[in-house]
Length: 213
Image (cartoon, rainbow, N blue to C red):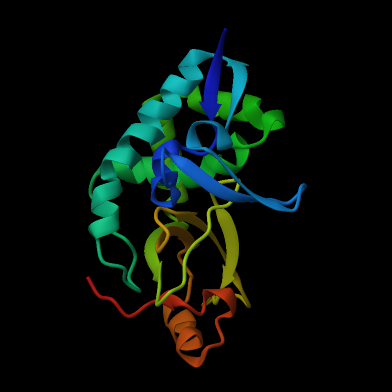
């Protein structure tokens, strides 16, 4: 067991919000103040945890997603699903969205470790099952709007759905203008586009659904 500086929100994801010497400005809800802290420490804590858990996170998520980030940022947003041909990148993105909520909670570290101890073939099977119900989108905000980064690294939101009154999605900001969204197959992209045009999309009104592949 080693005492390590463990990031529960990956540093490579927060680069677009950094300024100066890798500083992040954030709002502390407890102190009700705007503060600044090094990105090395803001989303990290010293943990006594097994190094192989960190290595597995690096292998499955950190490395493929960080290497694929330039492609993701350059790829145009669309109201069509994001097609990722690189399996390791696709698996990394889906895993990021699946495990991030568990990763930030100390009381659920056992569940995270259990997942990471599975073989690559077992994890691939899980991703393929999940992919039968959920799909990835790349969405951007327009004009002067910006994404703020949450202290969990992801955020949930509701969207129009073709089969039920509302659907649910998970968003992972990868820049101040762009997020990767994890949405159900029954997500109604045309319905959300229509709401955005009408200015009736709630806080998603500023999303850009007009780019094409």
